[in-house]
Length: 584
Image (cartoon, rainbow, N blue to C red; front, side, top):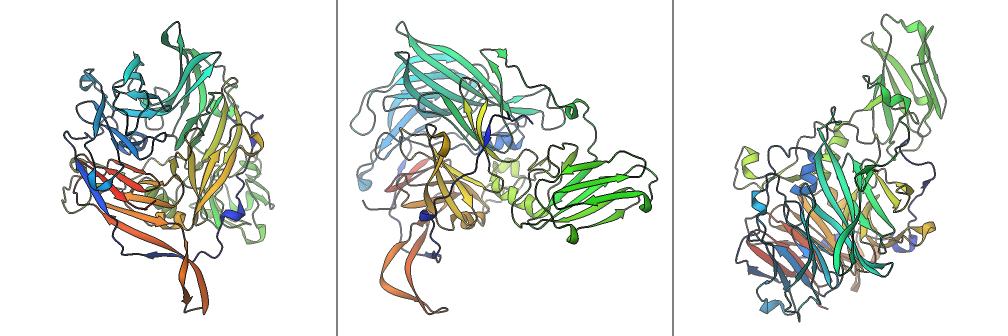
């Protein structure tokens, strides 16, 4: 296992007081949501993926990028970059009198010449600093002074350096270390990987950069690189830069510090020869189907099959066991069977003891099998990765259909092979200190609740959506359950064309939007003034939660989507829409 044995496995502790066992359902409310908009002087340019950027990971990282940024340090203040390289800021105080977005900075470089250019990205580092990428490999650190409504200060460039291949900024923080003002940034790149011969040919790299002010000048002090095979759903640095947290479908490991390779734990003997898998397996919530390749010319009488609740052994007389070891979880031996398929393989059906949890592996530590998706899971993953392609990629410019595609996920090589996990890395040892196996908890979104804390992540638990606040200073309770959106996990799963999701920092509502026009708002239940009866069961309903749908007057794809306690902000290439969801 890549995972350091010292990393303690940890499970998330749900706060039962934040669950509502009596939640009935959302009721569609036809109350219109007041909607205002500003027409932009210059378009926000959606950087379309090139033919070379064909992988799912490119799509997740760059095709699904949120072009609108919320300033968590100032009330109702949003920012974006337009096609002229201008950073524009809009602060809303009165919806009926929206001003024009104000230019606060201008990227002047010739970034459009860059071959693999990405969209410009922005990260609000502190109340007075911002990190900016031009999408062509240059990083700017800008001293903004106070931002928000009252400020009309132009931002000042205090660091501008070419950092290599193009990247987007995932997160940044500012702190004082050894009496020096220090900024830490996380950059995301998808790079061609010569060692990635079997998969897509690319791997995902995260670079953690430390910049500090020494002798009146900001300089790069440290560069650490992690590599993995999937774009992380969540990646953030601790407020004091002592560590980082990562939620991803596949594991990450630190590979370089300041350009020098990091000693890796020795390779497993298994990894030496990349041979064809000796078995294939798939699973549903209830059972597992396993297909084992058998030696040529074997007959039924020679099969040696032994199954206990937690152990399996499959072999042929006269040979060493083909597959044996401890199962990931318990099965019911009585209800499990085997048959011979096409004289070549043994097909085994295992009944899971406890229904529901997906197994990340079949036999603990055995890497010789290959996991095959069944249709239902492929559909689930499809739905998780529903995304956008431009009309020309669609090959069918149906103008009435939104430019949204669930791409065929042919290369779903190994969905739970390295299962979805949340990891805390220590910044000094570069080793994981805690790993949570998120297994079946689908990732929904990330949201800044309190800018001085790490961003929160929202995960699906059964039908609900739970918001978790990282607490890096509490190793025994590193992720705290702070809010629940009833049934949101279930509700969002039915939205085929969903693009972005978020919630208000005070949790008064959650919202998701499609690729085009529509957004859905789910409010927290509120006590009902007039008592409603549930006719079916003849009992009172104390709480009803409202769902509302807002449809924008726009035929352009949604590029950015953010929520404040009172408003929902939606960016297209030509307009910024402001929806007044709550009256304070």
